[in-house]
Every structure is written in C-alpha cells, then in structure tokens.
Image 1 (cartoon, one colour):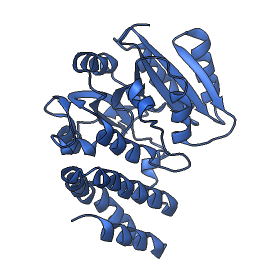
Image 2 (cartoon, rainbow, N blue to C red):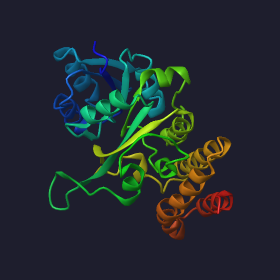
Image 3 (cartoon, one colour):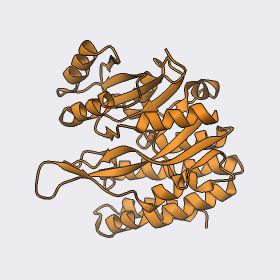
Length: 298
C-alpha cells in the first residue's frame, strides 16, 4: 500500500440501473492505488449481484451487505469501519466519478498535509428525448465553495466552503475520521449535512480545488431523496439537518460561516420549498417550513 492509497466507500440500495456505470467510473480512474468498499444496503433488485460480481472479478472491490435496509448513513459507516488506507472518499452508487477525481484530490492532500480536500460536482440530468443523462454546468454555489483554489485554509478564512455539504466531492485523511470519531447520523435523511459542518469546524486546515469530482444523478424515476421533498417526513428531516448544521457552525464560533450558510439556504433551498407549500394538501408542510424560517439567522 502506498502513502497515497485511497478507499472509496460506495453505498447502494436498489440502484441496479446505475451501479455498473458508477463502478466503471472507478475502473477508469487515473489514480493507480484505489480500492472500493461496496456496501449493499439490503437491496431487493440486482444491486447485490452487480456488487458481488465486481468484487469476485476485481480484487480492488470489496463487497459487504446489510441483511435489511438501514439507510445511507449506516451504509457509509459500515464502509468506514473497513477502511485500511491513508485516504478515504465516497461515491454513491447511482453517481459517476470523473476519471481524474481521485488523482487531483489525493495529489492535493499529499502536497498540503490538510485534513481533507473539497472538489466540485455537477448535476447529471435525464435527457428530455432519450434514455441517457447529460452532465450540467457547475452551479454558482458550488463555484463559490471551490474557486479559486485554496490550500491549507480554514472556515474563518473561507466561510463559503460551508456551502459544500455533500460527502462525495471530498477526499479525507482516514486518521481525521478516526481522531474525531466521525460517523454519519443513522436513521435519517440528509445525513451528510451535519457531518460536513463538523468536518469544517474540526479541521486544522482543509483545501478546495476547482475540479469537478462527481456527476450527481437526478434520477428520471424521481427516486433520489433530494427529489422527494414534497413528502412531509423528508421535509422535516431536511429542515432539521439544515438547522443542526448551522448549530454546529455557531457552536464553533464560525459566525461568518453561519451568515454564509443562512444566506445560501434562503436563496437556494427555501424558494422551491415555498412553491411546494403553496399547493401541498397537508397544512403541516407550510407550518414546518414557517417554523424553520423563524429560527434561521438573519
């Protein structure tokens, strides 16, 4: 194992339609020293076979399975317990990793010594007139977090980084996870929001690079959790995660990041939720949204 070896944790539940493309994107990595832990979260479709066949054919893949679905946070935590390499990264099994992602992320950490590095991502949207998907442009809030490049920075110096709350556009030192006993919340949606803010506040330094690491799939069938915000229980978990993320920043004294995060939530997250609330059949949806807005920092 080299000092630049990285383990990619790949959780999946009923993603047989997309899993081969995700695994192919790992096979295409320019970084030579990677392994992947494939965590099947109790799938009922062909995901189990796809993961197991990949591990049987290629020693770089390691397969493990939950007997029943436990959620994305638990699946990622199962993967974390199996990491033996200096670096850790993530890829959801319905997404695609760009070929140079692991090289660019680990090269940066190798040079800077930071606790983790943050890259960018784009939406992988379904084509209107065919079965395929096309990657979009880097969105403004993603650009604000990663461009220009910053090495050995902090949240105080770069509060806009707090807008990047996804697990899978980063690579980290595995010792950073172990030292701070970092794990994803289990039994809830949007498990990466609070974890990301903890990472920012705990890091001695982190890096940001203007590199698209992952293409984040917006599923044609609407199955992604981010496409289910019309459901009241999903909304409540989402708002709880947003609020708890801000609370983590505030507890760490990162007031500039609190302001950045609150402003982004107001401009990015709230408008589509208000549009849903306008026609939602359950008045509790609007009540939950209004209650959250009352707690949001000005």
